[in-house]
Amino acid sequence: MIYKYLKDVKEYLHDPVSVQRTSQAVVCDDVPIPPIGDGEVVGFRYWGLNDFGQLLSGVKDYGWKVFNVADEVPGRRNSNGFYAYRVTPNVLASGKLYSGNLYFGGGICGLVSLSGRVVEHTDGVLRAECAKVRCIWYVYPPGPCSEVCRVVGLLMHNYPAVPLYVCTPKGLARVLVVLAMRELMLER
Image (cartoon, rainbow, N blue to C red; front, side, top):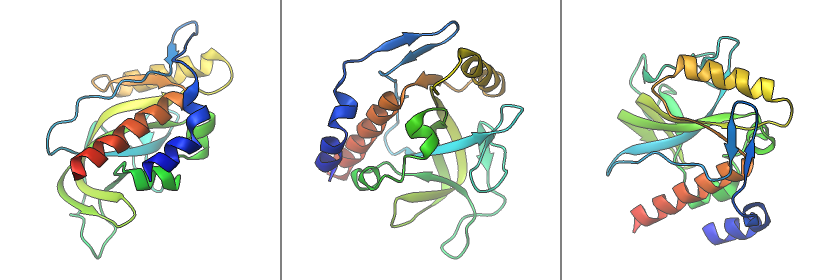
């Protein structure tokens, strides 16, 4: 399945690594992934951003902190918990990980470590009792640098201990392929 996905995005990933410089940010295609420990459950998710620079869940207006604890333990018969996708080749090929904002720029996404009670759905969705923001990727939007600088400044102010990377959509695609390959290796 991963090979079909790679074939579909071959042109997207074909260009050599490039770097664009703006007045206050370096935007690159070669995006680092934080180290992931053995047995650590990580998920990919995207967020909205409120006017104060706080990450917001897509469905509820929950403002994310660096470390988050659910009000109730997730279970098979409820919808409690913090949501993220396990990045597998099948989930990657399904296109579920690309919202319009991420694909065209201007989206905010990242990796979260999930702990406590974790429920996994058949479609790759994970729900966890606890979630820690491991890194944030801001997909560089087309347009003026002033917006990029504003968003980066807000995120750095609210999440100073979390690595923040400004990347292109191509850079994000590379990260997702690497994460999917990692999951494939762990299955073996």
